[in-house]
Image (cartoon, rainbow, N blue to C red):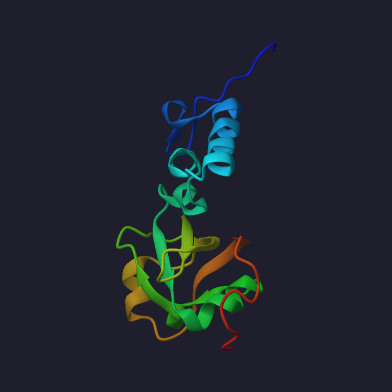
Length: 137
């Protein structure tokens, strides 16, 4: 192999990409002229990466426990996409739309809604820093 070019990653395509020179120019425009419009068009929130995944919205009281690596109990689910099936990759999100991490669903959405106990999502990877939400567990 002589060359490798990534044209897509998840829902992000090459059409949405910017060159390093674009990023540098946007940064210079912001620092020298105070105009951040171009930079804001280039830099996207981290949560954009989770758009293709079904979402599980976590209650505020359970967020810090997940940040410490705990699995998400059914009682800690605030809301869940109806499309969630057992053993699929899901995005764990706060009610404000902040990404907490990703995990594997251990119950289908219909089961989670009626469950009084049990693990709804096994936490695979945490991105949110510990202490971002208060410890309530």
